[in-house]
Structure formats: structure tokens, C-alpha cells
Length: 505
Image (cartoon, rainbow, N blue to C red; front, side, top):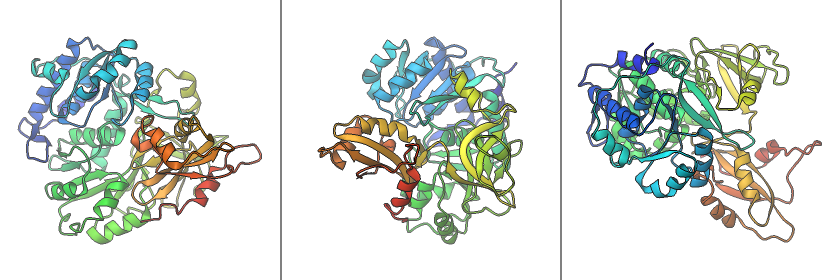
């Protein structure tokens, strides 16, 4: 038995000397150095007691070393658990308690703050900074580059990615070596990635898009990356001259359209622009095509499934559609309650099946069972339809999810924090169309009788309780929330009432 995912990556690696990861200043790491550094980090993990199946929770800034750590976890047979860098200590307390990691890796700046959490929950702590500093970086520098990769099968866990639910409790999606390998191979082929490609990477690497879609696809194709620490429109535009492809969220494209230097000439050598993680507005699709001559390729995926559908590489890339199921993946539209498949064109629940679909939710067997049909199809919670040409259209989200700037926000979690603020009677959090972020997190609040709590008080209170991307962009006040006869808040009425709150850009 080989180390399933990394064995595939290794078998497709170009010879040492081929650039893998380049930084904006021109420095970087070739494939030979990447193999060596991942070996050093694997030895460093082993040196602090990380073994097969152990979880490694990672909350660090984006850096080449963070990529080496991900690869090292694969090689050591550990389970990689990346966390959003915006999560507060309160939020991390839950994740560490649930994942029960052998090791928590954080930035040197947060070691004191998070060390108590780790100690209380039985995890060791190591630090890794974006300047190649920290205890884990030091250990890796002193370790041997040779490492005997641990045997892993396609059914063994490679990663645990947390995704929230409407109850506010985050769930760990168990992704196997086979899940990640199959999706990366499919995407590399479907999107025509080759050794001659250079991907401009300005995404975070703590979620599916930036980590698995971008990095794994690059590795499977033996391509190169320009690795930027974050998205900056002017810097991205400058770096595009060296790239052949870019993956981004809709916000990237909205902000690039605001750059005067974006022309057909400046992106003439780019062969592919991909957008995902949030709905791309049709007007953004049209404006991009008019300014650059390129049709953005939109796709659809989830934390639990990796990528499910994609607009075609060759053929029409339809604005407002997420394309067709990728090879080997089956998608159907069903009646939510009964699971009965619906005729083409009708709106219903999207269900999927394929080698990309996760193994289940971490230590939640009943929840896992409830999210799968008896025939193995996963219930996505997204509502959609398939048109007469086979293109899938996402029309809503049954799980009440808000996607802002490519990040998932589940209203219940934000509502719980708002409802605990003195003077608040109740709240409803909704997503409202936003030209820059796709959806703006918006709170609609009912005050307690006689209370005078205001918008700025609520926003200041949430700053220390929730990651920035979860915090509402506006807090609006009403006398009462609209409800149906069963007492359920009708968020659709609130969304309709405030649909023009942020304008359309």
C-alpha cells in the first residue's frame, strides 16, 4: 500500500528545478525543494509525537511553509485540519475540543493566547510564522529531508474541514485521500492544466478553494504557482503578466474591474479565469467579458464534496449557471421531503454522488446518516434546477447559508451572539445582494421594550466574539420579525425588503 494522495502527487512531480511556488519578489521553491521541505516538516511532526491518524489543527498565515506543512501531514499519515485565520480564541476552543488534535500549530503571536486552550484539551503547541519563523520552522530546518512516507489507502482520512450548520454547531467534514485525489485529477484534466501553466494564487489556504482546488490541481498537473499572501487588486494585476490562469472568488473580479489597467492587452496571455465559492453576478460576468474578452468559468462545490460541477472549458460558459457535473460525478434534483427525482427544469434539492463526496461528519454518525440517501447520494442542502442543455443553476440554499466574499456564514451562530447583547430581544441574520462580496451579512434586530441599544454597540460587541467575515455589515431595527402561521421567521420577506440595501455596484 502506498501513501495514496502524496504518492500520486510525487509520481506527477516534474524534475527538480521546475518552479512550483514563486513569491512576488521573485524568490520561491522548485519541486525538488518542495519535496525536501515537506520531508523535513514530516520529520518535525514525528519529532513532536504526531502519528498515523492524529489530527493537526493549523491556524497560521499563508506562506510556503504552511503548504509544506500540509504536504508533511499527508506524508506522515496525519489528518490536516486548517482553520480560518480570523477565528477568535473562543471559536478555537470549540474546534480544538472537537478535533482532539495531537498538535495545534499557530502563529508565534498567538502562542500565549492559545497555549492555555491546547494545554487544557491535551494538545501540544508549535508555532509557524509567515516569515519562516516559529518553533516548527526551527525544528524543520534541523530535520532530515528524507522521510519514509506512511502507507495510506484511498479511504483513509487526509483532512478534516469544518463547516457550520444551521444550529450554529460546526461539523467536521471527513475528506479522504481518495476524495482529494479524484477531484484534483479530474480538475487538472477538465480545465486543461499542464506543466506549462502558471496559476496566480491569491486565495486563502484554509478552505477547499485555495487549498485543494488550487494547490492540489497545480501539483497533479506539475504546474507552477505565483503565491501571493493575500488578494490586492493592483498587485494581482501586476502579477497577471507572468500567469496563464487565475482562480478567485467573485470579489476578486469585482475589484479588478475597478482597476484602470485591466484591458484585453494586459490579460491577453491568460487562458483561464475561474470563479467559485460564491455566486458570480451576471453583470460581473458580462463586464469582465466586455473589458477583457474572457468568459469567466464558474463552478460549484462544497466543503463536503470538493468540486461538483463546472462550466465547460470548451463551449458556452453561461452566466448565472455553474455548468454540468464533472466526469464521474452524478447529480440529481429531487423533492426535498420525499427524495423523488424531479423532471428536468423543476426546482428542487441538489443531491450528488461520486468519489469526491466526503466520508461523513466527524464523530456525528446520526448527522451523517441523515445527510445521505439510502442509495448513497449526499443531500447538499442547495436548491437548484437543470436546464434543457444540462447546465445546473443554483437558485437558493435550504440550509440558510450566507456566502460573503467566498466565506460561509451560518446565520444561527451570528444570531446567538447578537441575542446575548443587553437590550436585544431577538434577531434574524440574512444575506443581502452585495456587488463586492456577493452577499452582505445583515442583521435585523428587535429591541426589548424600552431598550436603546444601537447599531454601533452591536457591531463593537461582535468584534471580539466572531471572525470579521461573520460580522454584519449593517444592523437594522424593526418592531417585529415576520413569521408564518407556524411561528417560523420568514427570512425571504426580509431579504425582499432589503434587497437594495447595498445597491448593485
